[in-house]
Length: 466
Image (cartoon, one colour):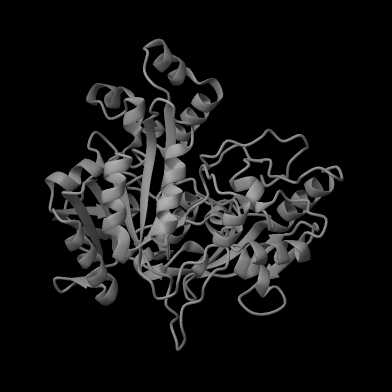
């Protein structure tokens, strides 16, 4: 069973920021400024940088956890794995913990993130009360919801580093308990699944039991599961899915389950949801031989990057006479009332399974007023959505071009009033992209904070792979 590490090393934040600023000054004029970062959770290949990058090596720590205020000050390159290790001993966790261990705080805010608490807590950037940002002008500014830099605060989510890089973030935390009790509810009709999501989102309970987390899996339109999580202090013999057992398979054979809170937060990481099957890791013999320390999403992601570089699997497929395959790795937000329509279309036209389901609603304010919107990812306040995640490849039909399936997904998502995350391949033309992702707002904020356009543009990053 995984254990929480508590051996945190004091962080010299001022020196780390100074190192970052010196590395910015070392980038020659006229060269685009990028991070000198070896790891990434992006699935979008990028052009190799020509200039030295920003040194963020000292920005990986937790600066402070304040149990009384329920806040944490965290450096921008700190992973959620390290943050959770710092907060759980205080009985606290971030309001939203993205499902993969090595996603960073800065990455989840500038690139979006989601998890099972998003039906009540929204997206990770909604729990940020302030953040320090290195701008394209080489300055460090502190952005808050109000004040001189409120425009940067609002536009930073989904800007993908095109408006700057977070060096420090202050986020809200929530109390948790030792265990998480799970109810795996099966649905054979997608309309019933949608109705259940609507009920849980509205009352935050199911069958009279409070619900603290909600996500699910669709194996087919006739077999889908909603997983309802409740924090508890009672947990006899919790399950362990870090060994031979595989979490997503348990949904089909167990109606109830219990995990430690730590293992619940990383339940999807051990097998990268179900994608570890592509490396043979779900085969019982391979699993026994594959070291447990390698059963992690970042290890699998490194293997994918090697495949992108060398194309070994693609060459093997060609030698076997098999058709080329298109990568279809996406997360999309679909309005709840159109979710069943999208899932049926996806099952029929794309044919990938399983898919992940994660209900989402922008965070409601604690006091009077409505939820705020975020211009670069304009979900509608008060609207229930379902994030649908699908990650894999599909065979290309004769005469098809690479990207055709992804383009059809983009069209369908837009027709249904949804949005698509930008961590993977995107094919929008510039006008459509600007309309969907707040292009006019982005340009105004970019011109203020990066007047010489030192950072790569948002469209260039997301679509042109610059």
